[in-house]
Image 1 (cartoon, rainbow, N blue to C red):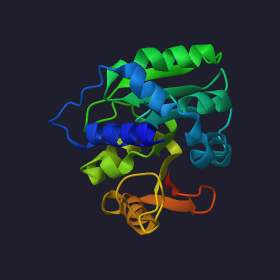
Image 2 (spheres, one colour):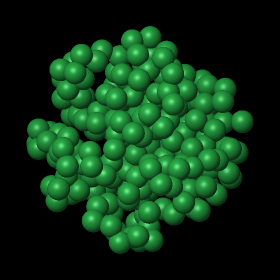
Image 3 (cartoon, one colour):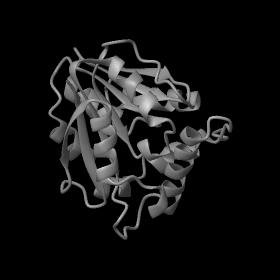
Length: 213
């Protein structure tokens, strides 16, 4: 568990500091950490994907996909007619991400190499942008939201899964580094998104949805 949490923190660091490139040469180590089975107990990937109510044929962007922990269940949900864009700033994750997807019989995941300030998604290409354990590391979020909004189809959504800052919990970043429900809600509203949330599905995290008007 400690190894997995350390890995999560370092990936977040890579997103947060655009002028520093973190060393991910030991990719197998990081993949093992992200895919640690004990994560399932509190991250509940299948329950989260089910709650998002994805439809066959939809396109999802998994921002900060790493090993594809969430990319795979979302790809299964949208089916062979849909796609998941697995977005990363670290290309070393792409080979194992594809290997894990192929091992699970999943062939509708496409990797996208992003930059620190741009997800590099085509305009109106995406039904859902999914951001798990990553938003609190992205700087310049107002400008970044505008790029995400341009990538959304009409009535597309942005989903954020992140850690409650006020709770004493055994996982996640320091309290001072977390974003509150109120802050993310306000940021989404300021970006012109219609906001809804689920604060009870996960033990340590909230889910906030922003829908394009």
